[in-house]
Structures are given as structure tokens and as C-alpha cells.
Length: 104
Image (cartoon, rainbow, N blue to C red; front, top):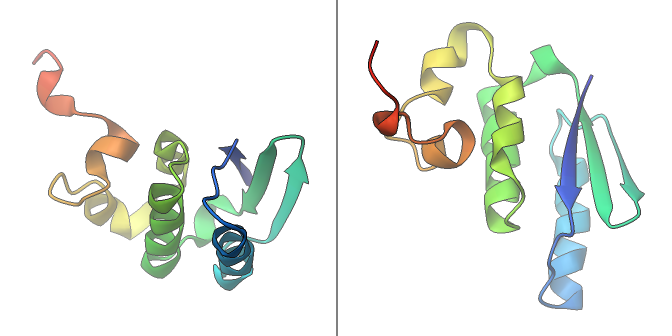
């Protein structure tokens, strides 16, 4: 199980926080979540992240400005090249800009 940490999530209204709280249970790969201090912990089995779940997690993290680098832990299997497609909007936020890395 992988723990994704949502630190100090900013909500702009009560309904914004409610939308976040209602969104989490709709993401099928999140098996459990809990609030711990100023964090929200999401528990996701490493090998059960479908494209749909990846999209939902990515959208949630993007919308609420949660550290997206943690999502790279969930990349595996046949969809690896899809997740790591540098033309996707999430690529730099999740994997960083590899165009600046020195070539070998």
C-alpha cells in the first residue's frame, strides 16, 4: 500500500472543501483515507491503479496543488509509457523536466 500525503490543502470555500471530501471516495483505487493534523493521507494499492484512477488522482492533486511527484510511485505495468508521455499536462509536475538533465 502506498500512502499519498496531501499537506495543508487550501480550500477556497466550504463547498470547495466539501467537493474535495466527496471526490476522494469516488476514486476507486483509494482504499482508505484519514486526516492527520494538517494532512490528509490517501492509501492506494501500488498495482491497482488504472488509467481512470491515475487521471482522477492526477486531477485531484492538480486542482488542489498537492505535491504531484508522489504519483510516480504508482507508475507500473503496461501503461508505463502512457503515464510517462511528456506531452501530457501532468508530466513535468510528476516526473520533472528531463530536458534539463545531462545526456549520458
